[in-house]
Image 1: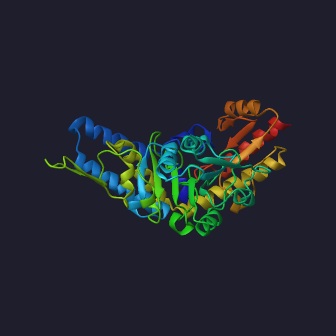
Image 2: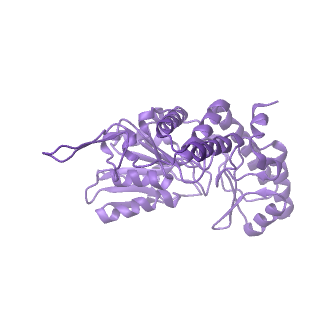
Image 3: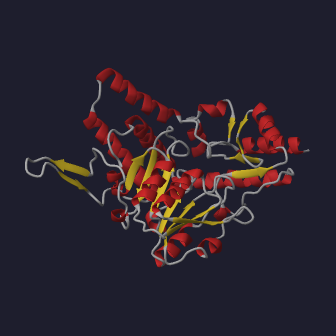
Length: 379
């Protein structure tokens, strides 16, 4: 039995649907759901046990760090991708007249936190994509001496295109610019060592290929820049210390080099337990194995759809993509409904975009079945 066949057994949805929608959200693996339910049952029967919770949280932090090529001190748990990007946008020091370079393909999670900084006098510049792809030249041409941040997606959610993080990081390093990345579509899909790549901040939610629930995210903040990112909100945290005395009333300090400074108050421990189990599952399977399998399946899907007469706008070269395959048809809504009637779970998006996103648990037979269905509809 192949490794992915055994892993497929963790996903009951595969017995009901052809599930090609990981880019929207996961169908949680059995082992992850079991771990999360066991946590809540322990709370139900035994009450809170915060010392034990702390151990689970730090175990999850270590596993996420290992998956991302980071150290535990560079990982914070957040609510979602938007939360992580907001931490970056509000924590970086700006002066009136500084600018941030975005592009038209970014998700709202990586757009609106930066637009909100206009109130601080920050200019937001937009590089426009061409042929469904963001060209580095168009981004770099917008940079000047007042550029503080380039923010982009690792994988574009509406085109499936992969941006070359190493090239952007090299440019940012040479120009003393911070590189902030929305990693929602790549985390758990692509092997990436964020420190080797030179990324400064990387935000993602846990509800897709990390196999966790909604409402929990992760933020990587490189130790090279972490002291430059100030937490906008603080509360009880492992990185915060408060001491009371009668003369000064309170001494307050925050460890500037610990990513836990971005966490405050009670954490979503049940969701962190799920992320712990999800990250462990990924590490057991091997992220390189997952990436290779996803590229094989999505490449076969892309080629088959083109032969079937569909209009595929996502890139085909392996280095420029991952698992997202985008169709733009005159009647994408009709095609979406047809696929749904035939047991295929996909995403219908704006501008006549239909998104298929297979993951390692899909089979060659499922890919070919989807190609046949699309061909039948197109004809």
